[in-house]
Amino acid sequence: MDSQKEALQRIISTLANKNDEIQNFIDTLNQTLHGVQENSANILSELDEEFDSLYSVLDEVKEGMINSIKQEQSRKSHELQNQLGQCSNALENSEELLEFATRSLGIKEPEEFSKAARQIKDRVTMASAFRLCLKPKVSDNMSHLMVDFSQERQMLQALKFLPVPKAPEIEPTECLVADNAVTVVWKMPEEDNKIDHYTLEHRKTNFDGLPRVKDERCWEQIDNIKGTEYTLAGLKFDSKYMNFRVRACNKAVAGEYSDPVTLETKALNFVLDNSSSHLNLRVEDSCVEWDPTGGKGQENKVKGKENRGSGTPSPKRTSIGSRPPAVRGSRDRFTGESYTVLGDTAIESGQHYWEVKAQKDCKSYSVGVAYKTLGKFDQLGKTNTSWCIHVNNWLQNTFAAKHNNKVKALDVTVPERIGVFCDFDGGQLSFYDANSKQLLYSFKTKFTQPVLPGFMVWCGGLSLSTGMQVPSAVRTLQKTENGMTGSTGSLTNVTQ
Image (cartoon, rainbow, N blue to C red; front, side):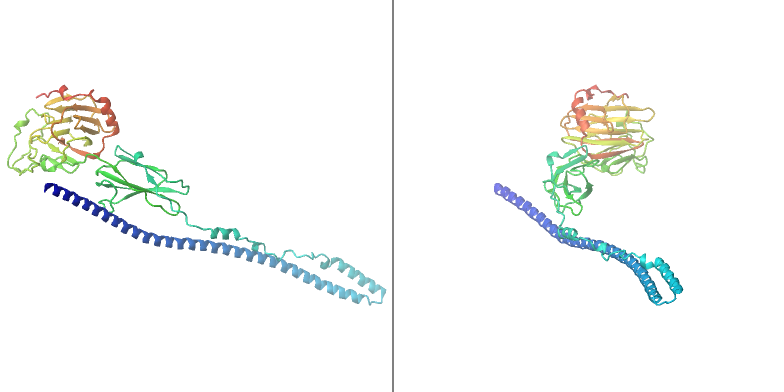
């Protein structure tokens, strides 16, 4: 019976997965169909625009040529009209002179004839008819009519669509996920010298395998990439995976997207647990700030005898009373002088990293990890269930590592940001200058229970950065520094 139920359950699971796969494919087909209709309409519109633009260019060329022909016609007509006028005047004068000469032949008186002959000779000598160029100054051939459009006609008849680029191929083995950055590398299936640029799209997801059409996040686009690789830096890895796809674009059209690739972007994400934090702490997801008014208005006072000899400076006591506690698991809210808040996500295995930045005027704070069993009056580093580094800027400046009520003074400058590296399986908790990656201190231990990120703050505030991978520099330092740093055994007793 049980085996049949298990077999039926496997069948149901297989059918459900297949149905989900088919539905995802149907969504893809519908989206593709809509894209075909929309893109074809866009292409037709763009084609009309291109030919309208071409017609406009041809009209401009035609208008320019017409103007040139008209200008040439006007110039030649003007030249010929002038020449025609000159010839008409010369012919008129010549005919008049010819008539005068003919009449002079009938003069009988020698003296008058001689006089007429001299006049005719003088007029012939000055006659314009003998100075005319009897050749047209311009021809009737129109030079601007000598236009050969055969080459242009062949070019227009040879017009073709610019080929759509093929889909690139992302090379997963060449892609790199490190230091909260992703480098995506791709190639073209064949050489294409008409490609102008690439467009890369990415989105975060919690699903392995091929991207889903109806995913919880939209694609984000990076356009105008000139090379065949791109690095997205400064990411917060708040999802398990990221999908990537890329397409090639030429001057006219974009090609199909590549087959999508899913890359793992695993990192520790947590927020501060407001439900169990001290009442004097104002807590948001990634920020905690000291609030001296947070515990006022309570009826009872907590004497905090459990905290005598505490290394944490105590401000003027605030009345903290019988406000109904917010329970996290089986542990009550922190109280007394344990101005503590823990993260909401337990670390049970693996290597993890996060960073902490304190306000400039923060008087006292601690950063570390603790077991879930940390008592509500306990302070970080004062018990054998917590490890931390502590910064004190009140009365005197101290910087120390703490565990099990022992302290190790650190002879280094307090960094602006502190990086926390927790190797649960390797039993190592290390603190770094987040900017320079200089090692500040390392605890070597054996974690017997899941640990929670822990924070103490008094008169100031802290802000967290999570969703971070273990930096490459930290991994390298862990290999070289392992076994050479401080350990819990080297801590001395805390002075009372």
